[in-house]
Length: 328
Image (cartoon, rainbow, N blue to C red):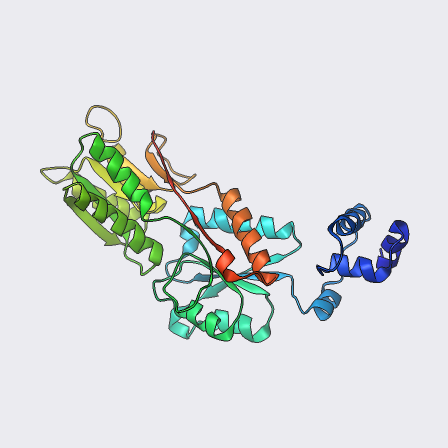
């Protein structure tokens, strides 16, 4: 199906049809919608190579994730990645998954920049001083950070208020008279990890409470299980156990279930960021710090990166979403 057939059916010039389908902004919105509707009806698919030559765009976005920690162990990250891909696909933009390793000078990112096979990068799992973002800023390459970093110039970012999530949970249970809190957290150098731990510690301090334990370990089920077993062996068991990711939370839930502390009169409250994973063997309800549904996140991130590609000012592409506390 050719552009000429679409143009003839609508009584428009081939140039107008071509510019509308290739994203130029000099076509009236009403006309653009008519053209897109007719193209969809006829099953028209533009030639990707020709589009790139005309517009200089690849119609692809890269999602840059660190090799360590392996994010595919995090069910929430995988679901979010799928939601972003689906949302971008509705705009005929592909999502490329790019592994990146700090120990090899970010070769994955360097390859994307050298080959120019993406129009922008989504950078996941940001660090407080993120060398990837610094490099991208120096090169003036469009990027959207999933998480905030400390940079000298403004940049586009999407983030959750990670500090406020644990603060909500500590406040809720402290108001109920509970005083002994334990924290199971990741040891990785990532901004959201620091923010969650600091929200926990600061809120305890504001309430005049001291943490029973504040562990920083590999974010795995095994570690969540092992450390919770240690906590339960103490003479004064914690009244609340909080986990900063669902893998640690799932391990903690298994240990509490085995020991008979996840329900009943001796219940120890368990708070898990993002809730227990979908494949958890634990069916007992736990308290969750809920950030948003994955489709909502995917749509938001996709919309922001598309606006970034269109050249929108990065100062208008900075979004902070608030968490909610979901009780059992």
